[in-house]
Length: 453
Image (cartoon, rainbow, N blue to C red; front, side, top):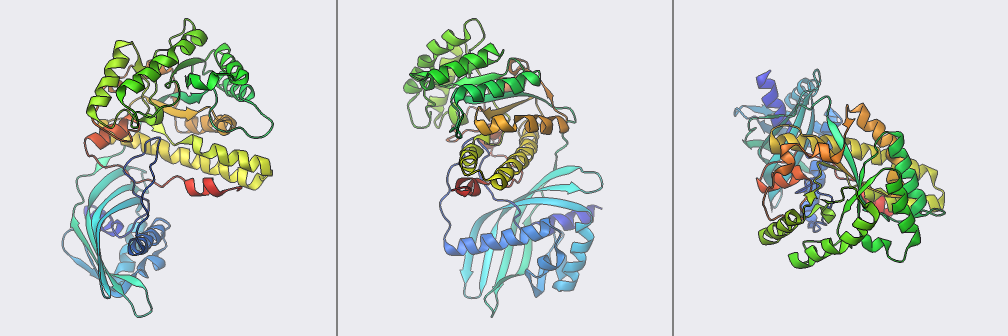
């Protein structure tokens, strides 16, 4: 079994099933376009990976030259298409793999190219469902054929796999839901308003016995907007709570600490007016960014502590807001097929990133912690909330209050690092400690931007 495991780990290092990205924060920065050669080899890895993930053995073997060598971790060599096919047949029957590569260097010379870098893989044993994270480095040598294709001539395992990290998830995790950007999150579809949206959202939460759920407000959105004001009254009258998200959703990365602190202070009159005697001294950083310099991060942290705020940290985030504008366009077009796709992709992305966030906790802290999920009070998330709650229940989650969840000692920890894009609490610790993320599929942002246009 150990030898088979090593074979599979080496085999998996052939392909890229998932895009690599530095973090899973609530903001996903744009990446520069790769040059043409880099795009070619990225596409080769993606195509190979798709075949590996789908267990398409013939297509996988066809990515090699007929006389290719595959160098295993112990130095032994699998040579030629027939031997590779046999290896695939044996190992794919035992394991499922999600793999990501970070290509550090690609060198092209005439009809040969060398691609090298690091890999990370979540390996699942099919019989038991047990999952492990493995990491290592690789080198792939490609040959350019007479008919214009790049095929793998030699695959080498240059380091690793390192000792695996067991990703054993708690069968009964707990969670608190939170909602950002109240009272006017996202654009509105035709024939609705903010009061209707927050009424529906609060009603769904009450039906699920989730009174006391926190929504984080930007008071700028209340100015000269009776609909927004009424919506926030409805939220609170339904038994929900509010906290601070700065006055205008300001970015700490783009402003000095003093300006950021002024935005926190400017939000307080609305919090006091609407929340009255309720505990509103919870603060959610916009974009989950906590400071791109240590001086800035520490200054704002000290300000929040001095003014008796608690930071409402997040462990689970799948950027639910990204579906809302597309939903509004599709409603306007009455495109039911596209709306169905939006619903399916929303839930599929939520499911994957819930698992990802939980596995990140094991990597960052050594164990899972009680969860806080970041959502937004948008029309589409409101529509999808019953199904999202069903998804969470199917994963074994029980629901709790934010204050009770964040009593866990992990929530008092501070990575004390300058992080330009911040992220969830596990994100921050992984980045600060230079740990390795599990592989993940990119969210469908491109299609969300283009659908129903």
